[in-house]
Image (cartoon, rainbow, N blue to C red; front, side, top):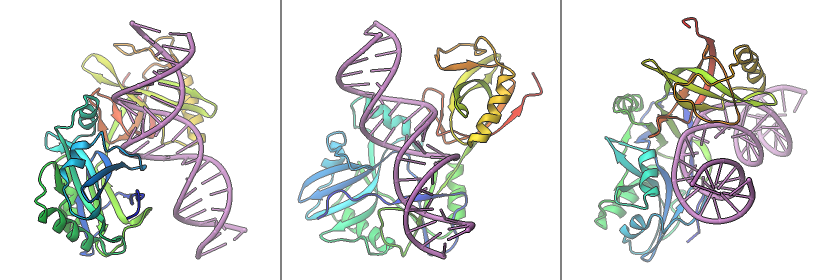
Length: 294
DNA sequence: TTCCGACAGTGGGGTCGCAAT
DNA sequence: ATTGCGACCCCACTATCGGAA
C-alpha cells in the first residue's frame, strides 16, 4: 500500500471530444480529495498530499471498507442544484460538515495497484466496491455517460454546471496532467469598466473592475492575468491618460496600492464564477476597449 | 536548431492563525 | 483593534529552460 498518490490532472479544452472511447462526468467544483482506507482506519489527503482527515472526518468515517483501498474524488457542497465552491468554503469556515458530499470517481488501489487498469474498469471496480458495502450519503459514486460528449456538455451548460470532465475509457491512471483527462468548462464573459489599477515594472499588475448597477458603479474585483509584458505596458499607457485622484466607485473601497482612473476603458474578461461577495472568481483578461458612451 | 512541456512565478477569490502595528 | 503575512484551498496565465524532435 503506497502513501499519498499524486493526482492525475485534466487538460483544459474548449470542446468535448467525440467518440465512444470517451466517457464524460460532471465537473465538480470543490476540493480534490484522496481517501485511503486501511482496514477501517481511514485517511483523507488534499491535492498536495496534506492530511486533512480531521477536517473531513465525516467523509473518512463514512467509508467502512474491508481491506485496503485508495479512492480519488471531490468533496463538494451542493447548493441550488449545482456544486458550489463558495458554499463549501462557508461550510468549512463554520467548522461544519453536514452538507459535505464526496463524489468518488476513481479507484487507484484495491488490495493491489489498479492504476494500470483501464479507466472504465477502475470505475466499475469502484462502483462494485461502493455498492457492495452499501455506501450512501455523504459518499456518492460519480456517474458517467459514454460518448455524446458535446451533448453532455450542452446539457451541463444549460443546468449552469461548471462543465464536464472527459476521460479516455482505456487509459491508465497517471500522476500527471495529460490528454487522457480533459476538462471542458462553461466560461462566462463580461465587459467591465476599469476603475483603477496596480502598478508593476512592466505596466500593470492588476486591474480593478467595476460594474454599472442602476446609477451605481459597484466593485466586482480584480483581474491580474491574461496579458503579456508588452500588452501590460500598452494597457498602462492607455490608463495613464485617464488617471483620477479619487475612486469613481459609488462606494469607494480602500486599496493602498491602487491608482484610480476615470471609467473610460472596458476590460473584456472571462471568469468562472461570482463569489458570495459578488466578486469575479478565476478571472482572466482578454482585451481592452474604449467606452464611447461616457 | 527549433519546438514543446513541465515548472516556477505572478496574479485572482477565499479561509485561517499569528504577529506586528 | 486593525493590518499584514504566510499557509492552505480553488484557479488562469506567462516566462523560462532543458530535453525531445
